[in-house]
Each structure stands twice: as structure tokens, then as C-alpha cells.
Image (tube, rainbow, N blue to C red; front, side, top):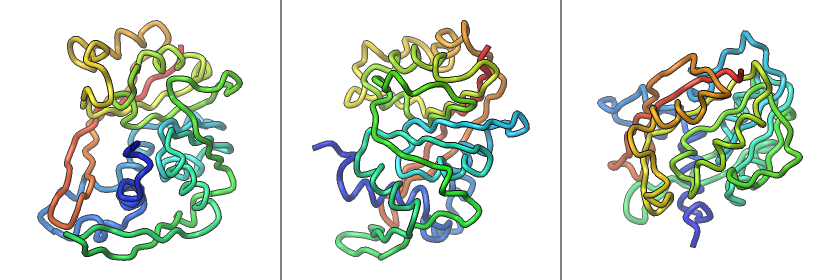
Length: 240
């Protein structure tokens, strides 16, 4: 079974995207600066002074970053491979969505995912799609956002080759990756042979200029006493 179509992972991502700080991390000793990654991957990297009108959110999961982009862009398209994630994101365009948080063992808490009122939900559309085989008529955008997607693709080079056509000249490409290369997602012969940073700079250099790098910690809760803490390499590139 595809793990991204399980109820467990859907609930985990709804909490990751929409959970309040205390719902995700009730421990004062915990890494508070790692919360709200779906929002920070947009706000910490984008330059909205460039006034992007259109945005594409690749690997949007359950949509929080897409809704954040809608504060600044007139149209936003979120694409994810998981039908369950897209169904949830579409539902959130018009209503709240109940879900469950695993606490421990079989103990769970009932929570509600909701889009903040200052996010113009009517500007956002969602569809399923494969980031390695995007539809030909997708067009190009002022801003493309892809958070923690590259190292979950079986062939990331296919997306890299498509990126120049997706970003308009002068437009922004926002990429984050924790550089977690695993054979369960990507065959090892398709991993970077050195650092992900050097690999990506080499492959994007002809079409993009790297203008910003930032470390972005993030926290995924598995249950009340177990978390995944990671640090993504965040970047902003400008299309030549």
C-alpha cells in the first residue's frame, strides 16, 4: 500500500500543516522554532516584493503552503501525488476538516483542521499529479514552490529538467530538501554523488541564479512522546 494514501499519514500531515503549536508540541523544552514549516517554507524564502501573480505548489500535501501563497498571489495551483491529500486540501477550501491525533498506543484526540481566515481560499485550486510527469499544458508561473519533494521522487532529475519551463523568466523557484536520500523512495544510482547542494547548483545553473539559502528546521509528530526533527536546506532561485 502507498503510505501516502493511509489514514494514519493523512492525520499526521493535517497536524503538521494545521495543528496549533500546543497541539503539535506541548513540551516547553521542545524545538518551538521547528513548528509551522508549511508556512515558513513560503514566508522565509519568497520575495513578495516581486509581486508574483501566479504560483504553483508542487508536492503540496494537504495544502497549507498553497493557502499561504494565496495571500500574495492571485492564482495558486497545488499538486500532489496523493489523492487522499488532495481530497483533504479541496475540502478545506470550503469547510473545516476533523481528524485525529495519535497520542499513544490506541489513545487519540479529535482535532479540527481549518484554513486561517486571512488566506483567500477562492484563489486556490488543487489537483493530483506526478511531479515527474506533469501535464504538458500546465503552463508557467511567477513562483514555483516545492518543499521537501526532491528526495521523495524515484527520478528527481525528471522534475529538475521540467523546472525551467515551469518558472517564468524573472520568476522565483523556492526549493527545500532535508537531503534524506532513501532507497525506498529513490534508487541509489539517482542520488547526488556528492552533496545535494553542489548537485542541485550544477543542474540548475544554466537556467537559475541562487539568491538565497536558509536552514529551515521542521518537526513531525508521531505521537505525544516521539517526534522527527529535521533541518531542510531552503533556497530561492531566480529564473534567468
